Image (cartoon, rainbow over all chains, first blue to last red; front, side, top):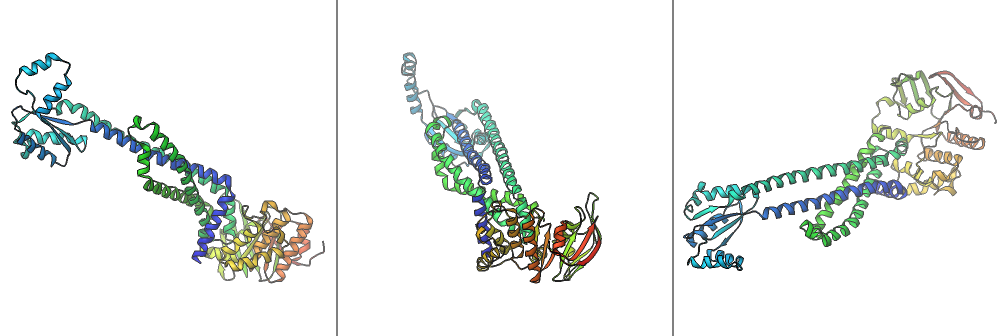
Length: 307
Length: 226
């Protein structure tokens, strides 16, 4: 009997969905908007993450060594730094590479090159560029370099200076921007998702309101509340599933166009990103659509079942 | 079969719909409840369907006190009591066939029973050619005959008809009365609520007169030819 009841509920839900085209269209439209907003917010979050990551990548801390610093000691320090969990990467520029870069940079400046030649020795020391896993970790890394950590304190004699203090303001500002942008992003996602879910709930509630008399009649002919409710839940699920299909038809070409036209502007190829997450995203959004449709119907029908 | 004992019904706004109702209806009776609008006829039928709960007294269906029915028991009761209303109360987005099939499905009947019984009952009420029409494609008389078919499809023990001819012309009214009489002859208890004089004369049998929520007369009459 259970499967017969399920079969009848699915059939009744499908038939009612087909026959009540206007009501179904309105509910699907509201659901489509909700699902588009959810997908859009997912992409917005990706753009925000990429932008912040790009900003953070532009920040590093450089440790400049004295001219007399031995390469062995520098490489040892590099190893020590690379073993720290806060450190993402460390790149080493030797003193020879430094002087070569200086010469290239000032190739047209004859006086400067002549002055360098007259020195008879390389005036540049090497340096390490350190990138942290997160911009908030630079302070810890600098603390290690400045000798609060026993492992690194032995390198105090070869370090000429660390440019953290010059960069501190910009690092702090990036930290603040990143933090605020993340919070703002989450707030925007929550607000938009809530608004669109409320619109969807209200539309489905209105659709069910139109059936309130029919629901009462079903109850009066002896249908249990579960049997009366089931076709409406099926209909709610169908709204979600059809809206999901429409959302894909809208989103795929839109994201493709954004990928072609706006990659340089937003710093990420949205289409590539979208396609790389397609199956998980599509599955989650389908689940969200069907779940919201069923849930909205279940909530909306509740009070009309009390006959 | 049905017993009302000192039943009263008052609404939250203070309106009193029924007071001191004492009534017993035997199995197989044809009872006509008459009275002007607001006399309490519809409230009386609603108590039988558990659409309303009395504020005082008890309503017994066989031995069961309807005040104490659970949700499941109410569903079972409604499958034993067929209902016909003035406004037909058909499911607008279902065909004539589906309207009747729904009542059978709700009662847990099998697909085979539905396939065999629905065309048969539609034939009984003369709607076999309208099987796949929607209610808005039927005339008033056809809608009421469809409502009757739905009400009797599960072979109810009681049939409640609340102003069933209020929206019908004379010919359709007489049709409906004839059908109700036939249903009664087959053993179903019929409770007909109406204020239509013509109908009262046509039915005869037991007539209960109500006014201001009270029973003021309970008499047996013979039917007249109308």
